[in-house]
Structure formats: structure tokens, C-alpha cells
Length: 280
Ligand SMILES: Nc1ncnc2c1ncn2[C@@H]1O[C@H](COP(=O)(O)OP(=O)(O)OP(=O)(O)O)[C@@H](O)[C@H]1O
Image (cartoon, rainbow, N blue to C red):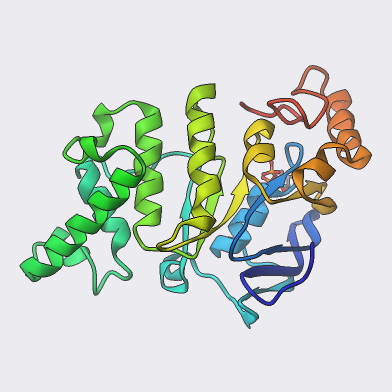
């Protein structure tokens, strides 16, 4: 991967949990106009890497930069840094409508945003209208505006996932972190999700780079410009999908994983699942 100052970069990140090295000298880049995927067998360090970028895990070694400037992410400050994330689950507020959930996502900080409305504090009608219109536009872009007034709990899982994505996009991030967005979705929904993800860095308004941690190989191969392969906390390969697909080190990592736990996952990166007991 060519080095650039733009976007997110990890430089030699190391993370240890007691005696276990979860990440070992991991470097990668997410340029502003790309979708970058992180794959690897179970336990390879993908979630740990995601958590480092979110500020949930502090690395023992290495550094992060955003547009060449040092980045010390903190979970509550991500939005202000122009970073948004979705989590493995859906995580919508059950007591709010779909629209309100997305409006919450549009707030940049608890002081300036939707929180006053939630707390019953006064805010201008104009702000409120603007926020609603913005949230509706995003829901519309994801094809779920017709559910704006619904309670999330009444909606199918695939729709809730879209709403969660809408909420993340509502803060107009320039980097979106997606942790297993295909989890629990059927093939058709995954394909539609792939189209949405692929489009994000190329939107005319508010384009946004994507760092995608995902088990579903088909999705990763279809949407990523670059793929970083982790195994035992190290980067064993990095490059565009067509290179990664044919890289013997990658096949070996997945094959080795399958041998370790027989029957776990599909033994090549062409399959829909990863090794080491991967989930679909
Ligand atoms: N909080 C923690 N404490 C101790 N060990 C941890 C912790 N989090 C992760 N690990 C270990 O670090 C290694 C990397 O785990 P991680 O969850 O990042 O892998 P992963 O690639 O996301 O796996 P999966 O595909 O199963 O989600 C694993 O050996 C895991 O057991």
C-alpha cells in the first residue's frame, strides 16, 4: 500500500493482553477515497485493531495519525474527529423513533446537539427542523425513509442495521468504522449493503472513507479497494482484492486455521466464511 499523509494511518501498533500479543507492529492506511478491509481468521486481532481506532484499547506500541497529525482517539471524542462507527450489534435507542435515532447521531457533542431536546431543554425550532431534514435525507439515501416514524424494535433486522448505518453517517464522518456490518444478514441484504459501502468514499456530498472489519469474504472482496490480512496479530498480506485472493500466505493462514479446528469455516478466502470457527 503506497504511503500517504491523508486519511487514517496506523504505524507499528502493538497491543498486549497480559502475556498475549494481540497486535504486533501493525501498520495500515485508510486513504480518504478508499474502502479498506481487515480480514483474518478468528483471534487474528481484527476486533482489537478496530478497538484501537475507536480508542477503546490503548496500544502499548506505535502511533495513529489522521491526515498526518497524531491521533489519540477517545470513544466520546470520535465524532468531533470526523470518525463514526457502527458496532457488531445494532444498538439503536428503543425508546426513540428511527428518525430520532438518526438525529441523535447528527449531534457533534452532547452540548450542541440533540441532547438538549432529549433532556427537555429548549432548542430552536429552526435547528430542530434542520436536523430532522438532514436525518430524513440520510434515511432516504439508505432507502429506509418510509420507516422514519417507526420504533426500531418493530423493524426487521436488516432495516435496523440500515438505520444504525444512517445514524453513523448523520454526523457527516470522513472516516466510517464498520465492525462486521454483514453479521446476521442474508445474501441479498449483504449485496445491497455492499453497494452502499462501496459508494461511500465517492459520494458527491460528504464522501467518507471506510475501515471494514468483516468475516464475509464475498462482501470484503466486492467492496474493498485494499485488504489487510491479519494472522496472530501480524499483517501477513496487504493489497487489492485480486492480489489477496491469490496470495498463498492468506490461503495458508485460513487453511492452518481450519486444520486447527476441523470443520471451522471455509478453507480459502474465496469462501463466504473465514477460518477458526468464523461466524457468518
Ligand atoms: N480483553 C482481552 N483480554 C485478553 N485477551 C484478549 C482480549 N481481547 C482480545 N483478546 C485476545 O486477543 C487476540 C485477538 O483477539 P481479537 O478479538 O482482536 O481477534 P479477532 O480477529 O477479532 O477474532 P474474531 O474473528 O473471533 O472476532 C485473541 O487471542 C483474543 O483471545
